[in-house]
Length: 186
Image: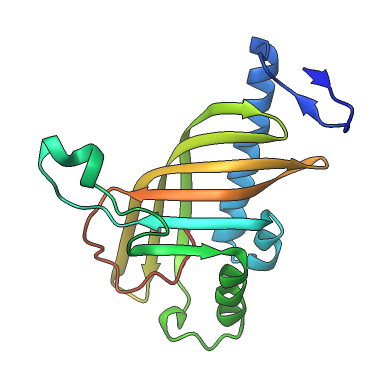
């Protein structure tokens, strides 16, 4: 690692120990974020999102093998996505949930976010490109159970001594969602 004039740290070619320490730090951040969501501590969770945060969940299509790379998912900003929204829209969703008058979350869901297979794909501090797998389990009332499973790509930015998510793209492993609603954060 080397210090720059602006006071940020560049990691152009991290040593194995530096990479391992950074991996641990980012993993801990992602696990803490999952806990905040599971505990419905949405206001604290919003603090982990950068002001320029963008969240996207493209739709997945069932296509022939030859068309996978070109047609398997919709394109962000150009086609219909399950979600393609900035931070202010996420903040409005949190505000609505916290009113206690949200038809899709009355009674509230019990949710568990599991994050695994965390990889640091690109290190260009103060930002790091991270890929991982996720499983989100939701149970509502007596018999409503949903599983959301897939891959996630995050761009994290170091802010002070912590991290913020500035970009998140989820690729769900299902083309048809069986959940009755998408009122939880994945």
